[in-house]
Length: 496
Image (cartoon, rainbow, N blue to C red; front, side):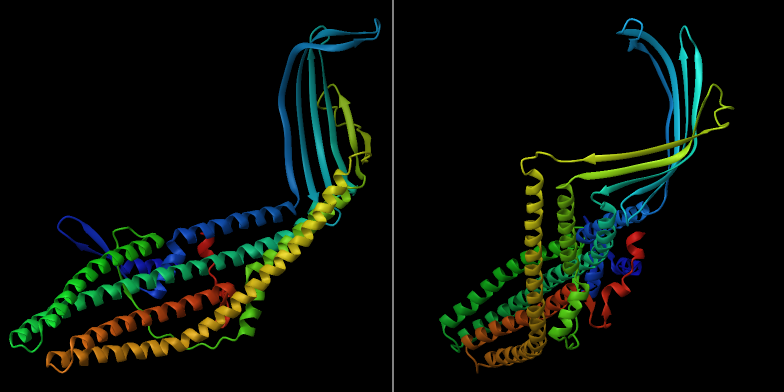
């Protein structure tokens, strides 16, 4: 994500001094948490590196479509050994001592042709040999220029399939990166609301302990004047003990949730995080038809399906062609010369013509090629069925998520209203208990309802944002800006 988000997060972080140690303190809202997760989390780091691997793979594919210039050299090779030679006078093979020096170089330009699968080349060669011994002599050989072409006449053309598959793989990698970052946002929001719930439970537990302690002291005074019986006083004392235990458990849960979020955001484990709950979200109307349309346009699952089918078709064609005979053609025309000096080796070169036709004909293979072809055909059918099933499941996921999102918008209204009512009811019941117009059971029930309303409200917020981030992930569409997420994605932050 944008670097200014990192700067913003860095400015938020402050340091508080303690006697024996220092703890980092950071205050985050939901948006800052998501931005920090997309920039610094290990999940985001893994997604970005996976994309960069695909990026360089695509760059390599494009580079292979361009002419290449290569230099092949054997600067020096020295031999001194005994080697087998034929003696024509005696009609026998004999070993003779050999001592020689070789040098060779070739400069070649090549261009692969996607349409035919062949390779066009232009090259130049220069060779040198010097023999030592009883007859010492030197020779140069040269090919000033040679133009040639290599082609499988009846064979598999990998260039054609690479040209079809590589752009799809790269487009899928781009959308997969955004998909993974949206998944990171969804996961970060889950940790965010888990910590928010733990913080709310902790604050409620502290408040309950304070209230329980106050009510117990009031109960003691009422017991002295026989306003309540011993059973009610013991109940108030039990509530205070339970409140103490609840506070300790809430503190443990708070530390655990805080550590989980800090670890996911790749923050220091001693970081103290204070969360600010998001405001009530504005209503968004998302139809199922729109969500399905955006998912088909943007979700990498559809490109994955297309890629798998193409790769299966590629394998099928390869096995089909290899089931028959193969024929290859290699032809070149140029000039060639041999001389005893470098000056003469490029004078009056002779024309060099080389034509080669190769055949590979399977005679008996016991059905191996036919079996491979049938396997590829069956695998293609399986791939088509699997991709169809995956797309159906994806559509079902989109439909259910849109439905959940619509329901969650409505539930937040009722959860917020219930929380306000529960707080009001608790305050009134507490006041009535103090003046003796409410019993202990009414107070306990009111406290329980308030806690439950607080949990329900945070859960409603969590479910809403989880559904929202999941819709973004499935459709890769920004419903607030009304545009695909890839259109506004900052690719510069990935390449830098």
